Length: 340
Ligand code: NAD
Ligand code: ISE
Figure 1 (tube, rainbow, N blue to C red):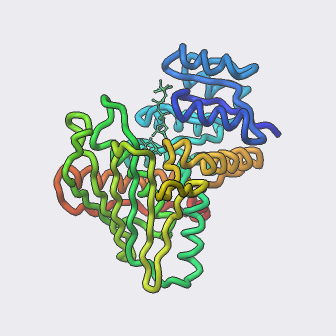
Figure 2 (figure 1 turned 135 degrees about the vertical axis):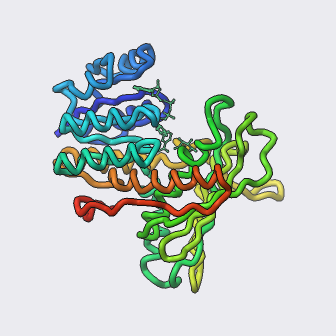
Figure 3 (figure 1 turned 90 degrees about the vertical axis):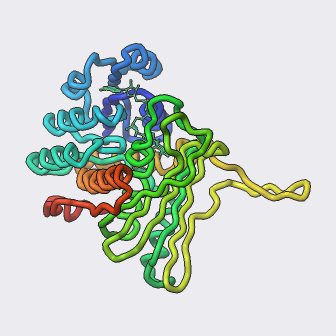
C-alpha cells in the first residue's frame, strides 16, 4: 500500500520531509500540500507529480485522497490542525512541539482518547538516532551501573535575527532534550531550573543566549543542558551520562578524522537536517509503516503533553529564577503501551 500523505506547512522541515517521502523512503507519496504562503505551497507542489494545493489546512485534511496528514506548520497552528485530523479519523504526524502549551496538548490527548485509538505521532526524532539508541542500550544492560547525572549540549550555528525569542530556546530547542531524557531514563522530569550565563554578544537584542536548563528526574538523576543557539561554528549536539561505574557519551558524528599539518580533526554538522538525517528518515519510515498497518507507534500525544508540561515549568523558571516542579496529569491507561 502507498500511503497518500497531505503536508501542511511547506517551510524548511516540511520540504525536507516531502523530499524524504518522495525520494528516500518507501510506502508513501505526497499528494497534497497546504501552506498559509500559497505561493510557497504552489512551488513545492509543482515539483511533485500529481500533487494538489489546498487553500486551507481543513480542506487538505478533508480531501478523500489524503490517507494521512503531516503537520509541519508553526507550533501555534499545530493544535487546530492535529485536532482536525483526529476529528477526520486520519493518522497524523506532527512536528515538535505538539503544541506550545500543556493545556493545548491536553486537549489533543483528550480528543485522541475520545477517538478511541492512537493516531498521533510527534516528531521527536532523536529517539531514532543511532547514537542515542546505543546510549540507551548501554544504560539498560546495567554494566555501568545506575545513572547519576547527564551533561547535554545543544548548539545551533545561528537563529534568525528576528522572531526567535529566549522562550523559544526552551520551547523550540531544549524540548528535544526534554523528550530525550524521559525516553532515555524511562521516567518523568519532576522539576526544572534555568541558569543564565553571560549573554553572547552575537545574540540578537533581547535574546538571552545561551541558557542552561537543569532537569531533575523522578529518580534524582540530574540533567544539565547547555542550549546555545548562536554558537557560530556549526550544529553540535552532545550528551554524556555519568553512571556509578562508568560513563556513556555520544561519539563524534564526523565520518572521518583528517590528520594533516600537525593537526587532527573532523567535520561539524551544518545544521539539524545534516546531523539527524538518518533519524528523520527512520522516524518517518516508521510512521509510514505504522499507517499502512493501521497502527501507531513512536512518540505519542502523551509524550508531546509530558514534554510541554516540562516546557511550561522551564518557562516559569526562566521568569522567576526559581526551581519549578512539573505538574503532569495522570497518564490515561490508553497510553500504557505507547512507549517506544
Ligand atoms: P518554517 O518557518 O521554515 O516553515 C513553517 C511553514 O509553515 C511556513 O512555510 C509557514 O508559511 C507555514 N505555516 C505557518 N502557519 C501555518 C498554518 N496555520 N497553516 C499552514 N501553513 C502554515 O519553520 P520550520 O523550521 O520548517 O518549522 C516548522 C515546524 O517544525 C515547527 O514546529 C518546528 O519546531 C519544527 N521543526 C522541527 C525540527 C526537528 O528537528 N524535529 C527541526 C526544525 C523545525
Ligand atoms: C529547530 O526547530 C529544531 O527542532 C532543531 O532540531 C533544533 O536543534 C533547533 O534548535 C530548533 O530551532
